[in-house]
Length: 117
Image (cartoon, rainbow, N blue to C red):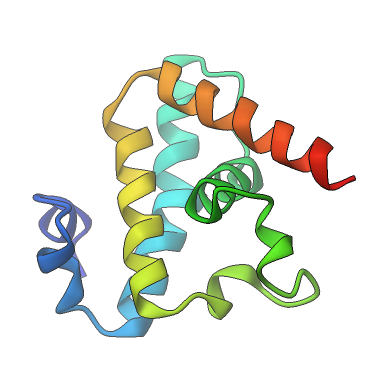
């Protein structure tokens, strides 16, 4: 699967044709490789893959993700296809925008977590 081809439009229609495993692979490529590389290149404070996953999943649910998924299991494997597409779209927003979007979403994520504790 070619990353740029699948993310070119980043529209729901361009991702819906992908098989579930391709969606999972794309999500992992974005969160484990692409976003950390962009973060290092641009000097962002968030650089670790698990931070991107947390922010994206919390943004997806507009709440702490483990209030919606079993935190003992791998989170992305519990997402349905529509949620995977949405998570990929959120990752592409982070990739294509400046740090301000990520920073805002990180603050929201941390606030949702404080409210959960």
